[in-house]
Amino acid sequence: MSPNPGPAGPAAAGPAPGTPDGPASAGWAPAPFDRAAGYALLDELAGPRTRAGTLDALDGLAPGFPDWIVTALFGGTYQRPGLALRDRQIANLAALTALGGVEPQLADHVRNSLRIGLRREEITEVLVHLAPYVGVPRALAGLRVAAACFDGPA
Image 1 (cartoon, helix red, strand yellow):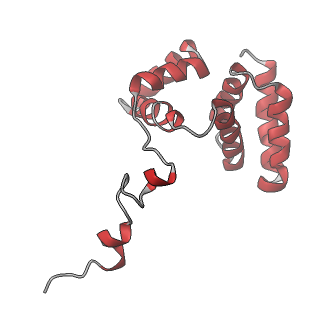
Image 2: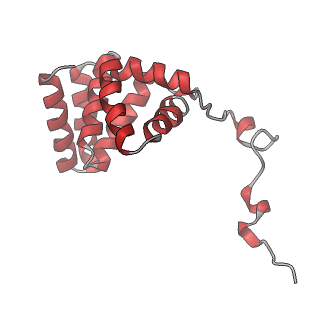
């Protein structure tokens, strides 16, 4: 007796990407995986010094993982059309603040946001705006991270 694939089988997966009813027809494009574009964008956002300091240490601990992060995120997700880099950074600030417990990554994204032209007042307002959605303690924690970044080296 052959097993019935049921709802989790291939028919439940929906149309394949690029087919008339698939994601491409709805304006979605597959994310590229462009390693060179990822490293170039990371240099633009974080700067070569930060990139080297962070990635080299992480590669010593988890070889290959930093390259995957850069390729998948900065060379993939960030390369998708539809959002400006500024908007992506605002989304990152909001997500990391909401998540909590990721202060080093939030600090990196505060500095990245400053580097690409967001003003301190805009970053502060993003974090204040989050208070009713993510809670006052998380918003305050985000503001503390931002304040430290504003007072420290860019």
